[in-house]
Amino acid sequence: MLVRRSISSSNELQAYVCFCPESASTLVNVAGCRWTVEQSFEESKGEVGLDQYEVRTYSGWYKHITLACCAHALLTVIKSQVKDNAAFHRHFAG
Picture 1 (tube, rainbow, N blue to C red):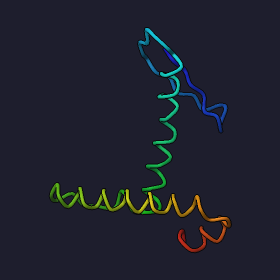
Picture 2 (cartoon, rainbow, N blue to C red; picture 1 turned 45 degrees about the vertical axis):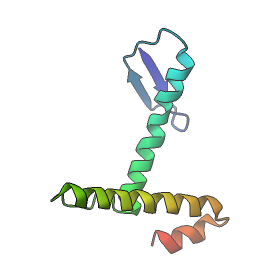
Picture 3 (cartoon, rainbow, N blue to C red; picture 1 turned 180 degrees about the vertical axis):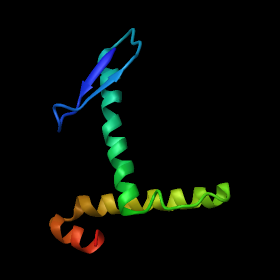
Picture 4 (cartoon, one colour; picture 1 turned 30 degrees about the vertical axis):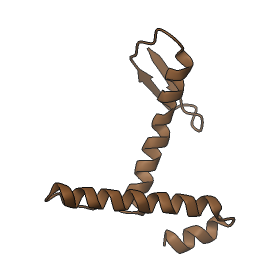
């Protein structure tokens, strides 16, 4: 069993049942990616409407998800290059 604590919030724990015969450090690193992925999905839902679709056809769903993910990637790149984060949030986040 692997219990991992969040770096930013010390009282947030996540437990995993796993088998790792070799290096446990790789398993710990992979388990740590979970928070990054969840944060990315939450930001995508709030900022670019990842969850704002009605599934009618697979191609429509695929196009919406692809466009939302590309928009989130673009905003992430722009945000990393902007020096004034407050101005970025005023402009893009409304």
